Length: 131
Image 1 (cartoon, rainbow, N blue to C red):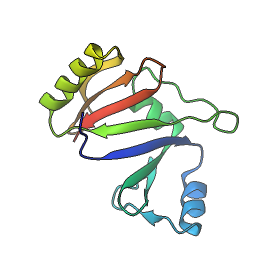
Image 2: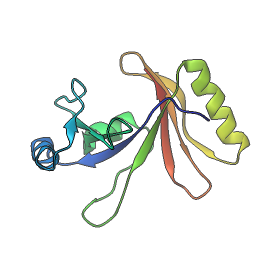
Image 3: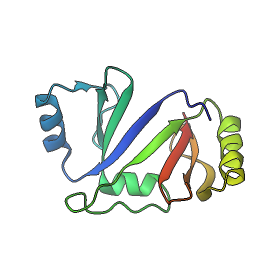
């Protein structure tokens, strides 16, 4: 796999609190990608993007994955950006062939989104999608 981009998705309870905290730390907002469902920031220049989703929103969009209590556990799901539906499907086959598990099969969701979720042999989950 050679993803075009990679970003981290974290579940949060309060977007305003999260936005205030990271803005005060000097993180650059990734607008216009912030909304009433997530706030987004650049980290390490433009090399890494971190999305902070409301927990119920990310759980409804990333199928068959439940996010825990981040106060007591560390949790992250990396999203790998595919360039096309065909590439996402190819990556799903690569994951299977490499010994990974498809957690949710490739499918269309939302407006102009397509992707799937997989776990590596240790259970670390990744979300793949194209938009």
